[in-house]
Length: 147
Image (cartoon, rainbow, N blue to C red; front, side, top):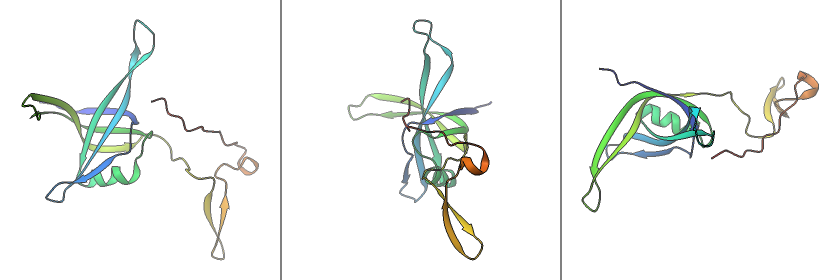
């Protein structure tokens, strides 16, 4: 039998880290994953919102380094859970239990400049993409997400 899931999408919210009563770390997140095809009616791409959980060290890693809007790749397995709600109705949900979560895009500087260590023990502020020294200009990012 084979139950292997590979996903790549953007986090719809910051990961939520919790601890079980036994002290085991668990993190929950949701990935927005675009489908490879467009709908027939409007021509717009469809997006699936997939719940993901990770346990132990993977949970700690995700909660520390991932945030809303970040592109992430997840490998794991599909799990179907059943439970009874408050009204006594049977409920079912599908989620991906992550074995690994990877960065799927390059590192972006979140501040205006990066601290650079200089010989002699001092630090200076330097723009990460200085057009005068590298020949590349920094692109403006308005930070708006499509969801």
